[in-house]
Length: 251
Ligand SMILES: O=C(CO)COP(=O)(O)O
Image (cartoon, rainbow, N blue to C red; front, side):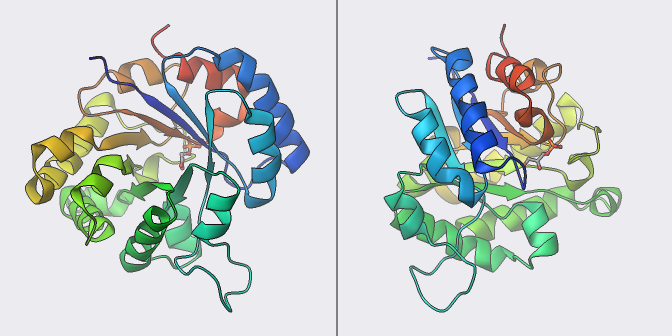
């Protein structure tokens, strides 16, 4: 059976609710019948409009963050329960920008992943090294560390559903894509790490994405690497034609 590639857009803090709905309305027609799994990760305030715009299509909707508690005195936060009630399917957890600017740690990532599953959301868990860490030769150690803690305490069935996105920080928003080989090497390490803890059946089912300056031109070769099951796409997912080409990476 051919693998179903996931093309997930992470819009970050871009597009107003109106712009977002308009974009998804247009994307719907372009990706109808596409073989890839299409996900758009949109700002909280656009989730409702995007869900409506995506109705009846193959486009799934992701939030870009969530709190691990169900409710309470956490000003400005949004819970998994709230997202689930809106019909949101995915949630991006532990993006490097959230780790860097909002003090997320491997421990909070793990709590969020558990909470996501509690409310029936599928987590897209991000990991990846900085340029300094790559140059220090600790990429594999760091990514294994992040992945192991993120998955701590999950059942095998939950890990099978989990999406892990390898996003080297030096490749994010820099136009500097990892080479196919660099991306494949770390995605293979991630799968091996999952295998060590959960066995090969689980590791084969877990989806491992690459993210970091993915473009319409680079998607085909990246997504055809054996351990890369798709992409988490920032900048190029904001442009209709580019994202369409990424979804239809195989031409
Ligand atoms: O951070 C990313 C996706 O989560 C990648 O962003 P770019 O594709 O803009 O480099």
